[in-house]
Image 1 (tube, rainbow, N blue to C red):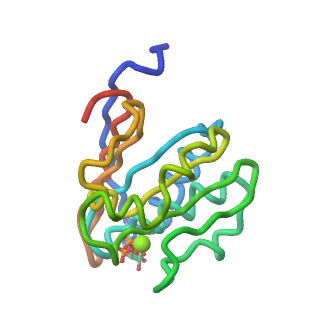
Image 2: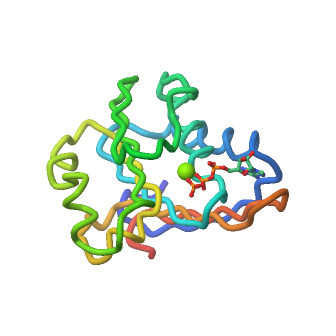
Length: 153
Ligand SMILES: Nc1ncnc2c1ncn2[C@@H]1O[C@H](COP(=O)(O)OP(=O)(O)OP(=O)(O)O)[C@@H](O)[C@H]1O
Ligand SMILES: [Mg+2]
């Protein structure tokens, strides 16, 4: 077993949306509160599908997890409180973090925070132990999903 600060990276291929959902469920079962998960990848890569799986593992109805047009932050109560944040509609920079009041959200150490389009946070200072997940591929292509935890960026 490695300690929480040991950098770890791994990559998997997901062949369909169910595999991405299941991967999310596996991740969700590992969560104990306080995790910050940054999701990057283009439109339609499967970020929200992954969040649905994570939510399901936390006892949240996956139907409640969507990418609504106007809401930037969606809190979902479950085994842990899940904040699902989607920054797509915001420009890069500190203002994105400000717009969703990330400072305040990150004070909740028992919650899980998942951010789609996390690259829009720009230089917002994040703890070193964030999880970074990048997804690539679109249409019917398999998705490449790369994870890093600890301080491996
Ligand atoms: N392997 C796969 N994993 C995930 N989604 C897949 C896969 N193959 C096809 N899809 C399809 O791709 C779409 C992914 O949509 P999703 O909303 O999860 O993307 P997203 O990355 O959140 O996009 P956005 O940036 O618009 O929020 C779904 O329509 C899904 O059915
Ligand atoms: Mg999405």
